[in-house]
Image (spheres, rainbow, N blue to C red):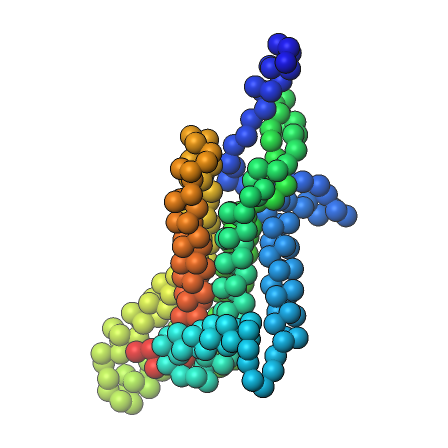
Length: 281
């Protein structure tokens, strides 16, 4: 290798970025390496579901046994959160696919080739190595989209199961002012002059908490996956053979835990929002 080739090789930078690297544009849409990984996760989930569906029989065997054990465990775990099998039947079709999708994205980023197979691109006068595939949950856009979807679904279920007026009063608290004249003048409950305004402002705090839910869900998942990605890259740079193996097994466990935390928090939010305000108190 001559001096010029050596300089070009040294100029290539490979760093783990906070954002997903764009690969190409498709009809005005930017396709990133994390988005490709998310599509791959969706494809694997659909393929696995179709394969499992073809093998369903009255007498379970093979793969169906494992699927039924997994599903029964998911139902029992969800029952401990919702408190009723009726709510579990409503919420689990949302929460369980969310768990599987996040788990697949967490684990795909650990496979060989993810983050290591790519191409060289120039950006701002410098040459960068851009991987073709990167874990979907290592992109804040993905985790933020999942969090927004989860929180929006909690409000949809809240409106459907508690009514639009009851759900609105969780946050706006108009009923506390509307019922104030009745409590003061008719029931002679003068404590309502102090309690009802406090309850109104508590509702406003809960509204702020809904924004905090989005931030909490998205940053927790993104932070743990991104930190694991940086950790594995650092260990591989130090010694690429045996040293990273314990950390890979650690990230496998972290991937399960983070997917479970995200799914269980979503289930908790769905259960709380679908209950009546009086039941919460």
